[in-house]
Image 1 (tube, rainbow, N blue to C red):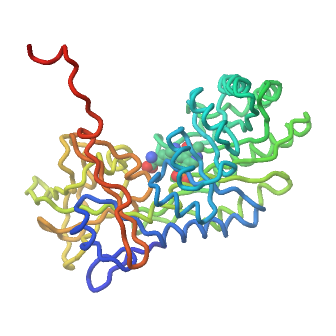
Image 2 (cartoon, rainbow, N blue to C red; image 1 turned 90 degrees about the vertical axis):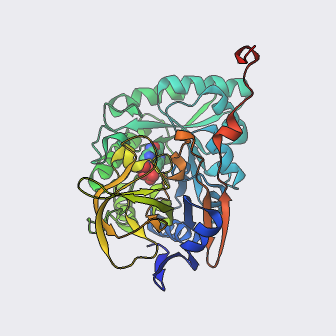
Length: 421
Ligand SMILES: Cc1ncc(COP(=O)(O)O)c(C=O)c1O
Ligand SMILES: N[C@@H](CCCC[NH3+])C(=O)O
């Protein structure tokens, strides 16, 4: 469910017409619905409550906008972070340290030291080598680092290869068959408190079967570790639940179905559970609003050239991802067209041969379900500014990130030796 609807022939976000935002904030611009974000946080809480008192840690990478994080902090969510930058953003938004899970395969010593000093619920460690480094950092700081080991269950998640993270050829986690030995080693290292186990097999998952298989691996390991006297208190089951992007496609499993599966599989584990949903919370809470620059005739179909590009929304170029494209004021006519941005790459293509609303120069279009991994993955390629972001809450709206020209804010004066003599 989302809060983007047509009223009086125009697409609105909650009570605000998108043309008003385009007029005042300019385009391209990301628009987020606070009501949709809250709704998804609550749906996820309700779905997972039967599993006990779970920690639901929003995967900040999906959308690190401070306003989004503030809404989720107020809903009581924690944060799953993968860099010290995300740690600072989560803390600045009011997320408490004991609700922060520090994931990621390449944390460096400085990141570990800062997060340890500031406090975290758990470092999700992905190798024995990383555990050794964390142990050194903890000893140096005179602190104890709470640690969970991420296992790689070697399960094919059935999603795009570039967002699959739990197969044997993926860089993530410790192979499940080596996990017992890794836990033994970590539990002997000074400065560490081994307390958790974690798994995450990929993103945009549309089938619960591989998730269930990976959770069963976790359950087996919890039992085996207990037998050896290594107590596991927290099982972090990651994120990954998919969302519907394309009208007419089968719906992914609901959070309720996911929660029921987790409840069934985790019976008897006797641990607290944690989850790291990202996409599910924010994907359809956002649209990328763009304006048509011009329509150019094409060999087979016209090219609709919009003022958003692959630097603003990378998912189609990177994963051939589908985003539904709608006219903000549809005339009722349809065309078959290619939708592209102005960037000098053929990959700067949002859709080919798409049956869509007919639009002309200056019309507004909305790229739906762009709230996750949209602005978060944007870049300044082609010296394009970073797209601004707007939050709507009922009748009110505000700019929550301004348009940023990276050339302005990141360049330095030329070194003297480069100046003409
Ligand atoms: C460790 C980890 N946790 C959570 C997530 C969030 O995944 P999603 O946005 O699919 O829920 C990711 C991204 O795939 C991840 O790598
Ligand atoms: N960036 C990806 C998801 C990656 C999830 C992070 N591990 C996407 O847009 O679909």
